[in-house]
Length: 82
Image (cartoon, rainbow, N blue to C red; front, top):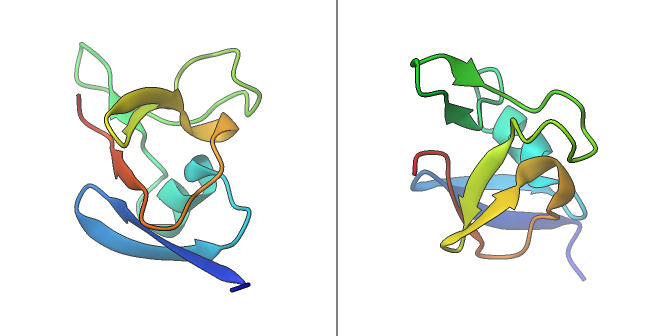
């Protein structure tokens, strides 16, 4: 079993430690870990870390998920724009 996982975030290949959350992968990928943009154009990122605030919504393999509650999987495709 590998100690790292490769996934795609907005088309970019990202390598993270196995068992990392998608929220952590967003941070590793660069920037401030932005998960989405609000309707007013403001960047939104994980806030509560336990799935309550809903600020870390992303698309994972085409399905809406919370980045802070989703474990990275090999080859997973994450999109931060809907």
